[in-house]
Image 1 (cartoon, rainbow, N blue to C red):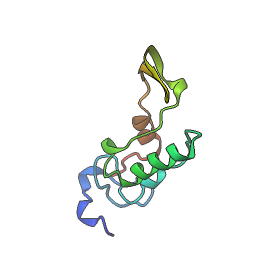
Image 2 (image 1 turned 135 degrees about the vertical axis):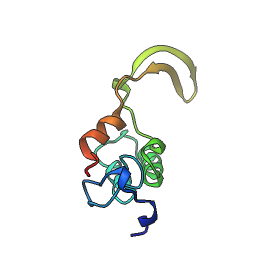
Image 3 (image 1 turned 90 degrees about the vertical axis):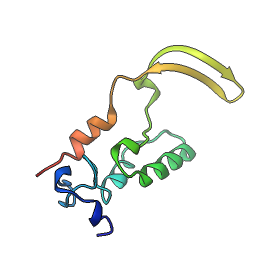
Image 4 (image 1 turned 180 degrees about the vertical axis):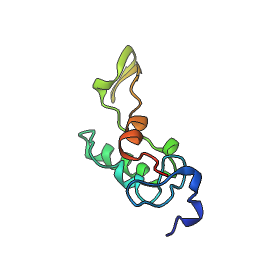
Length: 108
């Protein structure tokens, strides 16, 4: 196991491979691949970029995620230009916590 030196009892066990996690609620062997599944921005270039970052994540706090526009509460438009419009928005749903709870619960 290439990540053996990072695995600790205190981090719990991965529900997928049953080895100790490499950080809190994160298995470096399994989670980067699992988090790339089941979503799309509907733009293959954006998907490729986000998934490349996700595969390199070393813990849950370093993961970037696609947030669909309809999950944002738009506060106001703050800029507009030749490449698009920029909005200020709130996001009240924490998908990474929800994902972690549903798919990567620590098991001791």
